Image (cartoon, rainbow, N blue to C red; front, side):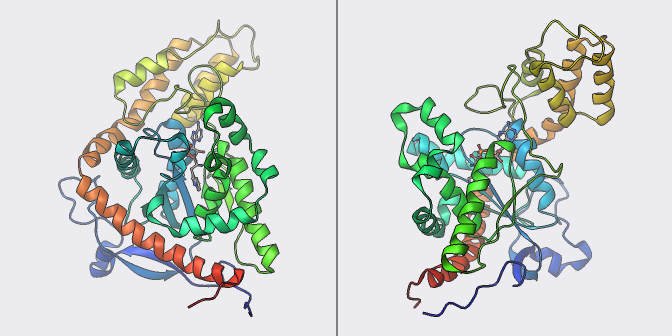
Length: 382
Ligand code: TYM
């Protein structure tokens, strides 16, 4: 069999989907037209293809509960910005959520919840492809191929695997073990080069790069690009919990959720763990206090952060004032998102039509890659 050296990403034209309205009504460009009553809500319009040299971006979130501030600042804010500059595919990782055996009757509603929250945060199906992982069976085929080149030793060393195995000793399943190769398949099937994720995904990303590199080496091709973690701030983000240590996470039970109302958010922030207060000028901040400042650095304006930082340094900081301000700033960001979540959640017809269109586009992209992968591996092509 002769395998012609497949081209690296960037050498070949890629496709981006643009809103039909932008073509039919060029004067409106990419703007959303016909939105007089609800300017913030998306009206789904059919997409068409356009050649583009934009780099491809992929990321996903598991439908294991509502989105929280960690998801928002660690990943989703990048999604919203990146859709303006890249060929983006954002998905809902429902296969990955099966490691903890969700009930069949809950899966669809959990997926719809994340879909509604994606839209509410500003991900626009006219600019990015939004799809559900299980709608793209090509992923599973690539997952199988990647598993053949991935070793038990390296999967066993993945920290998240070790942590989960410790937390759920009765359910250390093979899906949990091969979680990183499924994630690699999600990314590589679209030949993505940038992956916006939070700090907790660094090791999984290292595995994705290893999968790409190893495939290329085994078959002597330059086929898969090595995907890089991405965040606009140049460094991976870790949003801390408000309970004093560690990251904000669903299983940690320390989240501020995007759908929560002002009263709930304020109550949670005011309860954040603190200490006796600064004891001497310019002292280093203990972890619990640093967490509060980290959150403020991301959620509040720069001069607000500076004001409270100075108060810490000259020992005049009152945690109550700082928390009140932080709660106010979080509420300001989240209240319009909350409103849109409520709107979108009720529109299952819109959600389903977005998922259907997204599945078509994602499958087309994955099928193209898989066709070439089969050829490289040596399978007959019909
Ligand atoms: P998941 O569902 O745990 O989290 C989704 C995204 O939110 C980020 N995140 C955080 N970022 C900063 N601080 C936090 N406290 C915080 N909590 C969550 C995560 O880093 C992630 O970016 N394995 C992935 C889902 C996935 C995926 C993929 C991602 C499956 N396939 C392919 C990218 C590409 C996960 O479990 O994310």
